[in-house]
Amino acid sequence: MNVKALLIAMMLPVTLWAQGFAGLGTDADGFAVPERGTAFHFPADHGPHPDYRIEWWYLTANLQAADGTPYGLQWTLFRSALAPGERPGWQSPQVWFAHAAVTTPEAHYATERFARGGVGTAGVEAAPFRAWIDEWVLEGPDFDTLRMTAAGPAFRYDMALEAEGPLVFHGDAGFSVKSEEGQASYYYSQPFYRITGTLHLPDGPVAVTGNAWLDREWSSQPLSGRQAGWDWFSISLDSGDKLMGFQLRNRDGSAGYTSGTWIAPDGASISLPNGAFRAEPLGTHSVAGRAVPTRWQVRVPDRGVDITVEAMNPDAWMGLSIPYWEGPVTVSGSHGGRGYLEMTGYE
Image (cartoon, rainbow, N blue to C red; front, side, top):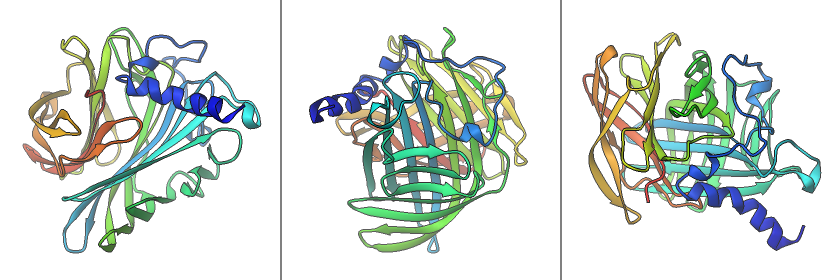
């Protein structure tokens, strides 16, 4: 394959994602699709699923320095397939790309990497667990004990993670519906990591501690054709409870599909059906030429939740090949806490 063809093959999935994320949603094109009632098998399911079109290992963390300064951190590895299945060497249809970011109250640093599958520069191994792209690594003897590294032009970090609770399965035992038409993914999280380490920033190293949340998801039809993007919240409340919720926005402005999970301190979870999780923008912020809602009212009436979710730094725009907003948030109202917010498809 010549260099031009390689670049086109690598960038094709990225182009589709940049077009409002809907390019991957309308047709599975011979890829496998999630089925309700499928059992998970570990540690194998911590590894890749090449028969599905898109997959990610997605970690965010709310951190704090000794002086109380808050920080946010992101480490994400994506797998996107040009065709189902795996083949050796340069024949591999798998494309890997990764995002890393650090957010401070005053700055947001983000960078990305790309790699072709089959040649050893990126991949995931289930046991012992290892996810990598170039020198960025998330690895450990198992999924509970991990070390994580990444670096960009203006930052680097080296972190240790230890799970203090169980995996949580979203939707119907990990079968997470994304639309009224039935698009779905397999989706589980480890929201109980304790994280410690050092951020290396332009002003020097900062020792930090905090909590991290890792999402695992794979699918071949992430969205329906009429959906434009999503708003995703992961919130750790001061009560010890946790809340994951998302809404999928429709292109015509009509009410979108919602889903969520209420997670007790011991990891017991309750699935929130369409409409039970409610998120309404309270104000927008101009960033990268876009009006992005960085202040929200989030309600889960059945759990007594009525909170304001606000960006720690409203300029946390991921100005990468796939542009989106991702950053740490603070929580006030009926509950206090902190968390992360991701918003895609804002043009």
